[in-house]
Amino acid sequence: MNEAIYKVELTGAGMWSKIIGKGKVLKLTDLQGGANVSMMLYNANERTERYNMPDTLKGQQVFYLCQGLCLHTDMGRLIASVTEDTVGWHDAVCGASDAEEVKAKYGVLTYQDGRNDWHRSGMECFLIELAKWGMGERDLMPNMNFFSKVVTDEEGKLSYVPGNSNTGNSVSLRMEMDALVVMNTCQHPLAPGGEYASKPVLLEVFEGAAIRDDDECLNSHPENARAFLNTFHYHELKASL
Image (cartoon, rainbow, N blue to C red):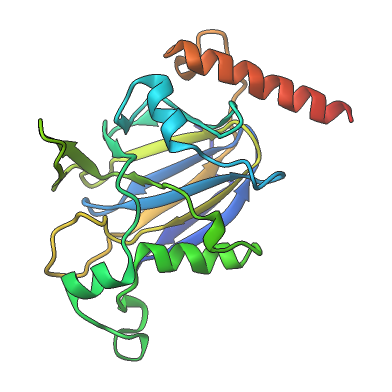
């Protein structure tokens, strides 16, 4: 991979949102181990189209995200693909923490007392970033939690698995359309209580390569191939207008 065209370190429940163009690659790196990156994705040009968790999971018959899988939209297209992953398991079902959960687990620490280490929830951070784009509560969706692992028992009870990601682990997403990426590094909603300690993450964006016929994400599931074709047609027709 070539040198990054954009780079920033997210710390202290860091919030971030920008548009990343089609074909570019977003790489996230866990700098200390134990990170969590909550993310939502929208079609940057038609923001009513966005990442769809049910279609993503049922179409690929999975419960979590990893290399070779694709992120489907609610229009039968793809918004991104997981092209590289050294973690192996990323939660796709548990959503983001809210203010009451954070208060119950970690207590109250205001900005006046804690500055950049003050206690914020994933939901609050999402809404702050969405507001920058003229969006709000109605635009919230089931989000992904990169670097975090949650498993279920035979009765359907969900359990958070500590230590899923180590220092230096990374995951890369290739954008299959111009995407508005909204994220924060707040702790996972099922993470144990005690110390409020969001972990730093390095965010990098790279120029991507053209998709080849042997692309892992294209060929991993029949539903992905159909969605890639729908996405290709979307871009071809849009470009000809």
